Length: 574
Image 1 (cartoon, rainbow, N blue to C red):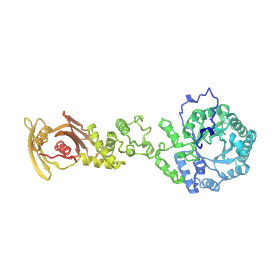
Image 2 (image 1 turned 60 degrees about the horizontal axis):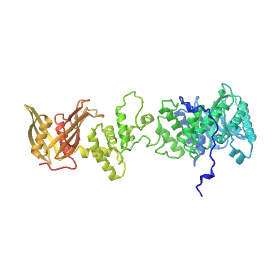
Image 3 (image 1 turned 90 degrees about the horizontal axis):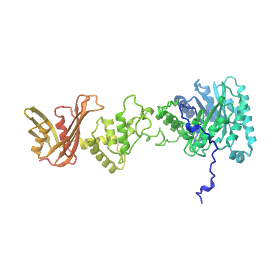
Image 4 (image 1 turned 120 degrees about the vertical axis):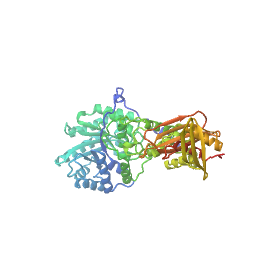
């Protein structure tokens, strides 16, 4: 059978019954090291050119990385040329340390130091494989042979550094495939290297513990890190570094739990490019910290620039659902989600802690606007449609009008079987709730006698009709006139008015819902109005809805009533 789980052995966790890491909380960012230019580059179908590497290096510096692995110069001429270029062209800031990777072989170590000639400060990263599968099947060596490779390499690195005293050196060692290595043996190899390098308070060594291939759950990796921190010599002079991969989809989680277990430093790449399923994504981990109020010590505010550069140099498109960075990660199509987002955003006050349903962070922090937060399709509800209209046009719809508009928009979305743009929402709103024909008001006069006496002229299908009526208020008199002349049986059920949110000319919008001949109509209209005015009148009954934007105060309410009658599903007047 091709699909047979019995060909795989279970991963046996280490015995660490007194583990303490689950009780820890991450309160500060690790020291970050970008490996985009080395681990990320070697995973590409088309490795980056020197020019592309320079562009990416400049981005990494701008984002705020203080340690950047710039290549494997002993194994690649383009890597060697790039390292020489950034040193000779003065591209490395004083507060940035470049790092190069080398295997534990004399000629490779010498070539690495040649590449770093003239660097102000640099990290030489030495590694060799330590896991049983590598020892037995790849190298054919026992444990002692693996320790000898590591120790011999450590001595060569130390000796070479002494021949270049003008550079401030730091040494790093990685037992490759650490997560697949016996914990006791991993500590033994690392301690042997530490004995050679003899670190101190001013020359700490970095011990990097790679999950070269992610083999188990993140909690087991955390156990391995805590075990190592207990058994490594001179812990106070050792920077414990993590390097996780994403084979099981848990690279970020493993790094986070590894930090809780005592690690000081994390290696990874922007947006997770790397071998196989990728390296640990520094953007995701840094933003996880940020979203919980911890300074990530990286500036990711120009997220679109980061995405553009990484996509250009790697030739790998970003998934739209990629955490924090994807095009759709701050977008809600679900009606209930849209409604919750709209309500939360409307209640936010300056200085409030961020607490918005379905949005773990403020998209504006990463240079995103709110246009993409709510997008409309057939799954959207009244809250999403209302959010789009308020954001783009400044019109705040009452709930009864949200319901009416959402039905129109949903029907349009179902018919088109696609997304509805905000421009289309506005067009539908104007078409269904702001129509100026077949009836519009031309003049209006109100006299206060015992009752309100009104005289008004309307244009009905191109014919001017003058009507006079009385009532116990302006709205009542206007309705009485329409009812008497056209036989409408018109009642006002709801009327709301508010200042437009985005208007610089102090305009207001009015929404009305009427019952006419047994059916409900809605309309909206706007006019110039003092900022901050909000009126509401309610009359019992059933309903229809409308809205309007109009420059004349006196004719505003009657004009809105007429808009509500100008429905696409019109009936005959009189």
